[in-house]
Image 1 (cartoon, helix red, strand yellow):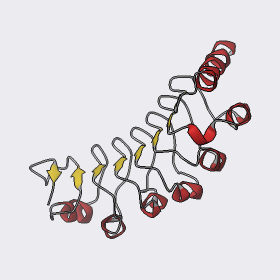
Image 2 (cartoon, one colour):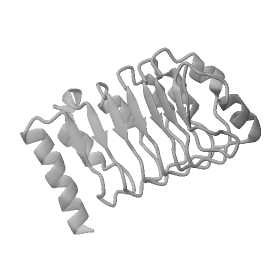
Image 3 (tube, helix red, strand yellow):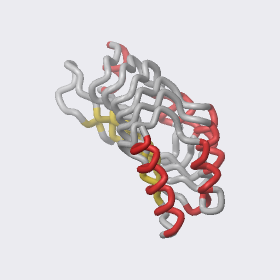
Length: 182
């Protein structure tokens, strides 16, 4: 455990000292985002554009993450045990890419559809059965969504066969190709 804490401290200090625009805390065995990190990064948080928390053991994400890193463009949370996101994610006006692959989502995180800047959503390898296609159609910037390896229900699979204004990656028995594109 002490090694994991030291690893997080080293990475956070390097981000601050080198003035990096990314914070990489992947593979740090985190079960939550350390509150102390918010304090250390408060003076440089506006410069952070990319946060990677991949391959940890996160069960939840604090709303504080979104209120601290207001200029965030990319958020990588793949490989955790998340089942939901806080409502504050919908307030991320600069977010263009979110990776939620290989978590434990059983429902599509609806708040993502409120992010007008969002271009890429990766939800591969979850347990999602349906996606809000109507809300996704209304997202002005959406270009790509990955729903591979989700147990999508038959009505969702049927809807995915229609042309869309964005790419949808989804392997289902009823789709011959894996990408629909207009």
